[in-house]
Image 1 (cartoon, rainbow, N blue to C red):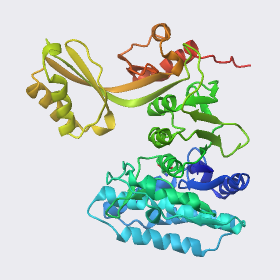
Image 2 (image 1 turned 90 degrees about the vertical axis):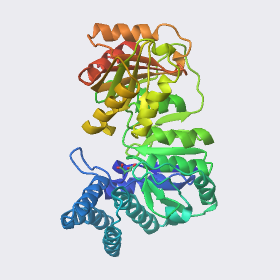
Image 3 (image 1 turned 45 degrees about the horizontal axis):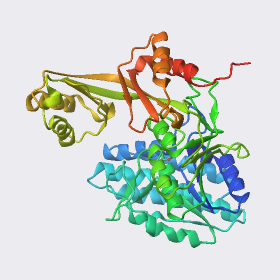
Length: 454
Ligand code: ASP
């Protein structure tokens, strides 16, 4: 059996929803369908999830939310009319939203999640009805009844292990099941959502729980590309890559697939296939546990802005027992999660996502590091990009780093930091955000085979 997840652009309007129905009908193995909320219909459109966040924020600010509510209901009403669905669906959606608004709790993050989750939830009900109207026996699944249990980190929740056992029974259903992505429930019964883009995670959890033969992830591109096509339009597609390669690439900005969605699939060894809703006949990209590779081969290069680096130095740091632990303890006390911590003899850098830092938080952390760790110097730099060169073939291969450094030097890009993970399947460079695109271009042309434009 297959679990098929459809992203927001695949469900953005009636035309797209019809394509989804056709895709599912074309293969009887597609038995569980995980859906996102309606996404953008064009580059300047707004996703339903963002409209819902605006709605929740209006309520939190104590403003009237009538406009925001109308906008969301209007989006669904357009879909309902074009699909010729009963108008009762729209009244139900409006009533659902009003009742969620009334559940305004003291916890803003939890309230936002309750509103945000309605995007997927209501869309799943619509999609189930479209299937039924087309004569496909289909049923909407309520994640609460199905046992999709999440931690209470609202907006950033993680799956609880018992969900996998709970969801297993979905396997025995005869109907096509329409499962809303992106959210679940805490043990206390409150709605909680995954991080943004989290319907991919739902799909992977469901696929792992039912032990699907494949997890199909339908989006709006034919495949995963070796380089961001917005930076290098002639980027080659990738037809096969490993879970580890995909995890590293999506961590550093490959938006096609959520990096946290890899984990459940890896644990259950479910292959993932990225496919295009607009061109389902294209083979797509397969992500598997193992593949044959050639020594030295680079699979893809990803990059992401939005990092900050704390640099600190202290003579004889290498001899000071417990220094690293105490540094990381400061970060933990301040609820800051760190991404990487490359170190030298007398110095250490800690890379963090900039969005966690406020000026006050930053001042507090630097002050604590200065006084509690008695460092000689500590500074923080913002505007750092990470570039990740990824490939199983880089393991034990000599010379990839040299070629990469030479390419960056030729392009006049200063390397702020280099880090090679112990798995040796990735090399990470830190560069200034202003240099990122230029650097990716240079690295792509040096390390990948890129066909010249005709
Ligand atoms: N609708 C949610 C978002 O926009 C989740 C998803 O589409 O995966 O982030």
